[in-house]
Image (cartoon, rainbow, N blue to C red; front, top):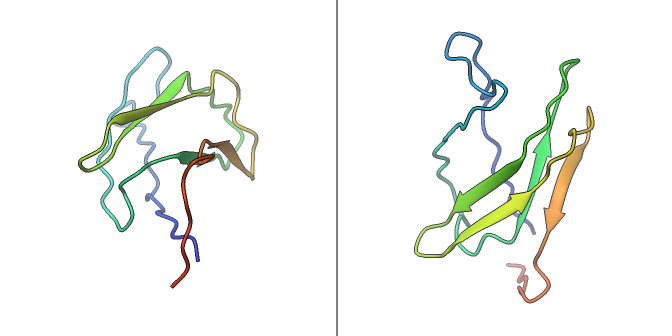
Length: 91
């Protein structure tokens, strides 16, 4: 079983989150936020979204950066799985 952490909608026209040439920081808490080795983004809507990179800081682990630098497709999860050496266990 794979645990997925879903963040609430994080764009906000009042705070100008996700504006071009900006850096946005969010804290997301949940189970299994250690040993980060994959990251998928989901875009829903008509506006294009082209993140340069996403850096994730896990609890007691080193930071991991995922380089996108491409438009995120609409309506599908898009990202990277760098878990070559990671092991998965099911309960």
